[in-house]
Image (cartoon, rainbow, N blue to C red; front, side):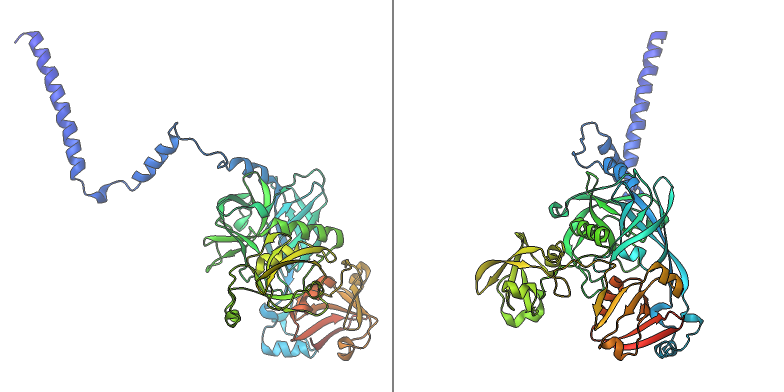
Length: 489
């Protein structure tokens, strides 16, 4: 064999060896059981798909713009508060001791506690919106910006009925968020939740709007309004008071609650819609308290089991179960059995939506109510009133008449003199429950049913929620003497 023939032979041998090796690999691969396949096989294919230059991300699915815009506008809030024993009493004996004005043991003594949440900057001069439950019972509020600057904050006002509060820091030229329009938000739309879960500051999560107008029964206030935006963006403890935004970085809600059997995120979160937030914020800043407007009706969903005997054929709207005397609804001509279909041309599909649409207004405002009666659809104009059946604006510092007594917020001098954190002064006591209970002029109310009271709005809410029950009033007189009074309410 000459040299040329030898080279050709080696070449063919190499090629044959390569073919055998390749065939053996393929054979080996076929013979492997499926359990030996890589568990990342699908992930690898997915990554390759995303890296394919032919794949174009649809416009609007880029979260980076909104995240970068909103993050500097969301703050961390630390609340130092004074709390008492759970449920108000360490034992039944403690309850009896306090009711009859006797000292309680140490288990019921106030103790400092700290909690944390989030907030959203809404003005360049330091106004911040958050949840009421983030700042309630606060003795000190501390705000940390995304750039780690720290400020003491003052409480501007709260509204337990919507779980919204406003606080303020002393600073200028702050980046602030732009309000969006929660009315035009669609189910299935992408949203971002921005906040500080588990002390993990400036955290951004994404999801879609899962539903609107949700009532989950979390607000225990008698006049609580729940018409939440439901999302599947991850929200955890610490996110409360943070921002829910669209992909343009506009605020569409304030994150408030989660549905969970564990205390941590389990799939769904809930935000107060910005349409309601805007109105609350404006009221709290201008008046110190929300100007709550009501129609003066008791309403239920048309599919409520309690209405099975009414033989209602309509599947849309809200059923009017009763109309209160001298209310806006009565003056507009609404009656029991009417089915409200629209408020100001906006469709009403459940109780939560109607409450939200009405609550966006102030006492004295007129709304158009479209309803069905005896198969006929009509529209009337209703002039809304407040919870006291009046149309006047009530300011936080205005004296307020309850059961024959004039009440007002304590002044700073009085708070210092009485050595308390805040309270409501009773003066000019006339005939009524206060006088019957033995309360004298100058008594400062500091708690109702062991829940702290610092101003009239809190007192009104606690008394409203105690309607039909007894209340335990705690407070002080100017001479420093503490007193307790039990009253039927």
